[in-house]
Image 1: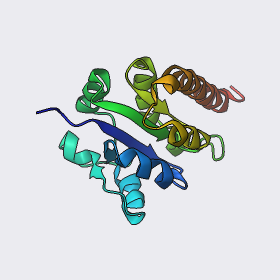
Image 2 (image 1 turned 90 degrees about the vertical axis):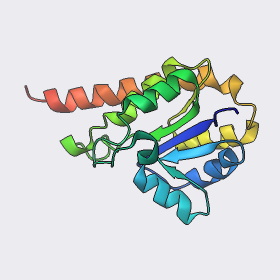
Image 3 (image 1 turned 45 degrees about the horizontal axis):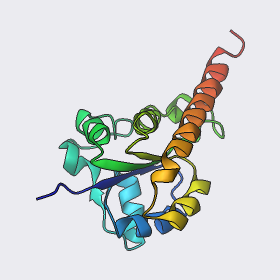
Image 4 (image 1 turned 180 degrees about the vertical axis):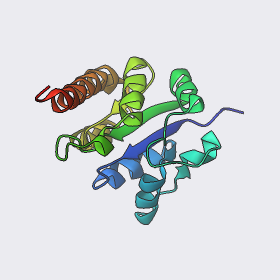
Length: 164
């Protein structure tokens, strides 16, 4: 019996993700953090809470940092990671410094040969347009993910170091 293949959704900006999730759900089981799972269910999409895989309840800041998640990304059992980061640039504060999302994106982008890292809502339509043939997007989206996380870290560093 084959193991199922999953897509992992963890979103701070959820609007519009339901269109992507509906297409993905035709081919993958969807894992999601609690708030994202609630949103997707409200749009009629079958979702598995990530806590069912990790075996631990989510806290506000530790949703995705679990060895099981990264093992599944490294093996390709999770082959799509859809994450957008906390809105630090819009509202700079310590609570908007995303740790888990950045880590997930970097793990997915590092494994671009078998994992698609989707980090911007404007990428959703491109994924939908070519689904299920997503292989050609992996390297391109990995480059975007590394750029996004780099810019995010730069903005945080500039904010923290301002006036120092």
